[in-house]
Image 1 (cartoon, rainbow, N blue to C red):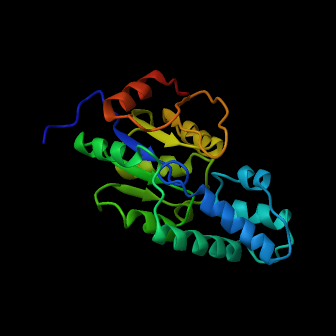
Image 2: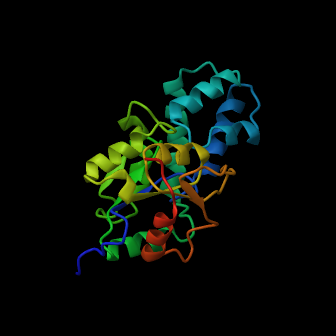
Length: 227
């Protein structure tokens, strides 16, 4: 196989929920069920306000906005178990994601999975992919500071031994975009469940269908990032 082309990204960092897989509805259903089980009411506005957040932040938000008396870790355990069960039954890949992953592999561009979900859910998704698909996996329980802090993306870049500015991140939420941009990575925002504000250092596109490695490299070069 030929060496990776010099004008391609050094690596591509993938968010998972809502970007690689359409699991946000699974999370929202699990939130509704858990709140209802404790005698409360949930709504889409509340659910959408925590999209992209670290799971413990979501749990604390649920405690503050419902009658739930569980600890944050207990809430996370309940939500994760529900979502993992559904992913084990069916992985809802986002359109174009698998095709782009395959093309990146053909062009020898390493990929990292950078998710605020915890390892159990990441593994449920990764079990459906070839082991070499992601060279690095950073989960929410691997870092001290979750998104929108830059730590998750900086950790992925360090693990791959690449400069953040030479990479490109793919995200679907404002929280995730802010994390990647703060790490100094050109970022592609692909809004799905929630709208993503215009953020300097990120470029919004409608979806991943038809997006290949060369076009991804072109998009990365068109995005201005902070020094």
